[in-house]
Image (cartoon, rainbow over all chains, first blue to last red; front, side, top):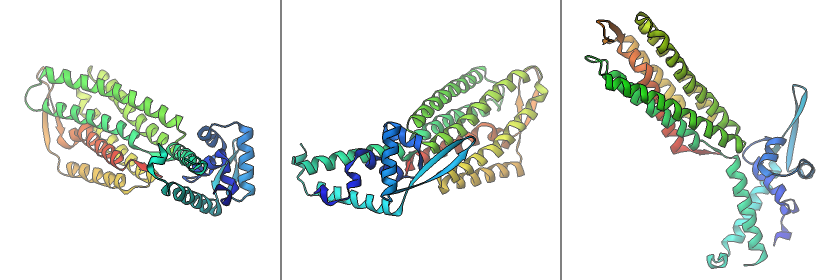
Length: 100
Length: 219
């Protein structure tokens, strides 16, 4: 069933990034704190999400340092909702005894 | 249980974990308001008790002890809430904790230092009390208004307006009361000023805490 839905959510890290951005924009450090992942891995997943148009970013100069803030795109928001509905459908179709 | 269900459950629990980190939950911040407000109100009631008739030394000692315990309790809750909010990367909760924590701890430290200084000269007590009361009359509604804007809720803004109106009523109709501090020295205070030093700040802080606790979470 999961093959039918977007491949973006096949990674736990990407799913966590989108879930974190649903409550508002976050900078790189905050995302790293929430998701507990290495800089390199997080950067790679963010690039992928950006390429898929799930997230957008803006760069600001704070003092002498650059700060990149990420936020979810309309497309990303829609896809996340679709994915949550998809999960709901899977889970509503099973008996509670199956969970034990 | 098939693989799809297992993966769906995994994903749901991951989404729930992330949301728990990112949703602004003000119910833990509410503890700071409830505890500080309660101590402030109790101290205020004890102070007013001592204003009628002669000073009861036991009430005075309890009042001082309550003030000290309240300060320690506020400091402990402030530090534990701050640590919790920082760990969870919640910017707004952290801002609220810092803003109110500095006010609560700052005014208590100021009041104690002023008390020690004023013990040497009783004549300055009314001026000090008035200054303290006027400072809180401006600071508390301002903080309530800022809190209302930050958490995007009407209730703190309404509390701010009610606070200003309550204080203005007592300023417009001052009720003078006598306060004997012993050794035949009697001071005269406005009842509004007395209410403004502990009771009003305490009550409104308590109300804010109860509102935050009940309405707790905001996405």
